[in-house]
Length: 96
Length: 261
Image 1 (cartoon, chains in turn blue, green):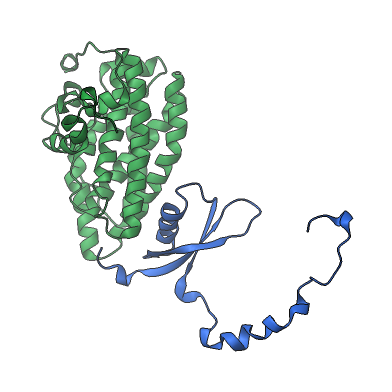
Image 2 (cartoon, each protein chain N blue to C red):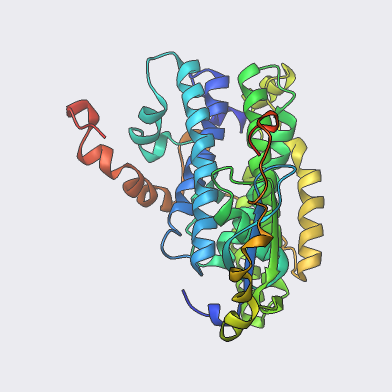
């Protein structure tokens, strides 16, 4: 298990079936994109988990800063009125 | 020469046994990479290749046993035959040595297997045609995987290129055997059951040339001649060692003596 340090990390997204969206399932190391696809196929679809795979270089992902978590996401927690829970749903509508 | 290959076993049994033993032995070679792969990802990739091949071996040996009609099973054939009863090609029993050698071997064999299976999808033997359709999907991936790696190693560093080139050079002498076609195989091919291996060489060479060119590698020259034939149970010394590992459990704790797992 040597020399993986010079391989890039790729994030893997798998779509389980047509119509659904790709979901993040994990990551793989690879020297290039095609190898990342093959590694992802071998690691994450061996039990028929999917029919389409995306890989994205981890360093290309722009992530929010955890230190700014309160500023970014805190305010939403006090705004319960944004959830559509204040309506009476007629019985005929059934389960939503 | 043809008189050398005399066997009383049915031609179909011998042919299917050859297909099954190729898959079994190469599958075992890929098993050997477990926990020793270049990295974690390739460790899993190796085990996937191994499982594909072992799955093929199970089906083929099961069918061979059925054709033989002596009440043996796929397990009997895999675990209770000695090296001289194996009918695999010498190429698949050669040691892994390093990743470059394993990849060179896998590319040469997968291209061969691909063309063989593609032809077998049209076999008049129902089992063989159904088997070929199923296995062709797996082998199409094996071909892609080994071609990608050949190119990557060939175009990689000086060392990676040297190693994969050495793999092709060292294994080249086992290539002619892949296309050697004995009389009984010709006969099966004429019946529309099997494919005569000699007919596969042209497309095999064309595919290999293409990958080697992309990889910047040189196709080895010359033809080798082996000191014996798989049809007579002759093998290189490596098969015995491989079978020691493969058959250890069954030999040490025979199910015929009550062991159960």
